[in-house]
Length: 399
Ligand code: GLA
Image (cartoon, rainbow, N blue to C red; front, top):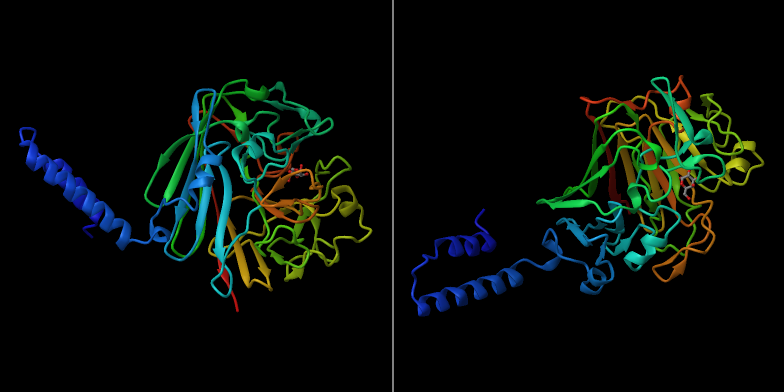
């Protein structure tokens, strides 16, 4: 289709170098008129990268270590908009309509980029090089022992401090997608190999946010990459997520010890508070006197996803008051279902101090501590191999 933008481009290309001054002025005027027409004809909400709010663009703009930090927006024609920062390849907000067509932000986040610099809860960012925990912050790979930062008691959590979630990623803006890349250097936080990571966020017209991850290394390494978005489908993060109903297509989960390291067992969910094979309110069993729930202060566990045909969601979440529904699809073997148990009012954004259980995460992933647990699927990546994974969060609403 010939758009006004294309016409403008063509007019620019066609301008000969020796054109006279009056003609140049006339062409410049035509360009201005066409640009204004574009602005009138295509409403901002239908422009793929139009910001939601210019003030926010300013609040999320900065320079870190000489690199520009910016806020990018993806919009589709079905009323969905996603804000992304290249700091930590972070999802800053996700706007989706409710059952009456009213817009709402379903993501926990901050009001400026400073919030993300100081944040301790991994809001919306990409976590790695090893998402989740590595026991005693060490592992063996090809006979050699590696030590990574102890930032969760004696264990290592989400790759350590100043990991990929605190780096400024390079960006390429595409039609309906934002592509982010970073290189985590050999030895970064103790991990071997220069790891080149790419994350592409694509927004489809069916209100799916598709996340494609790719990684390559120049030395054998271990990796587990995920996104740590916290959702609250009511759109109001002062409310808890306990009345959301969730269905997880997993017959087993990986129980943990008191430091949240898997014991190695794959435990059947049947007959336990971890049975979400049918829709159940998140809050229904969360306060049961169950050892696993006590260790996690709620749900903070890896679910072993049943093998599906790939077209079925692995998780579905329903929030009845707004009518919003979220479906999760993934190529990963596990998902960490975390109910925001450590939120305690110290993180502030969107006019609220985020309290315990006001957001839930569905971190699609390899299994926690897999580098130390030989029975778990391997997380080793070797030179010459390309690691790929895809996760989709799809939104809809039901009356
Ligand atoms: C993950 C962990 C939780 C917690 C959060 C961040 O989801 O499993 O235990 O550390 O990250 O607060």
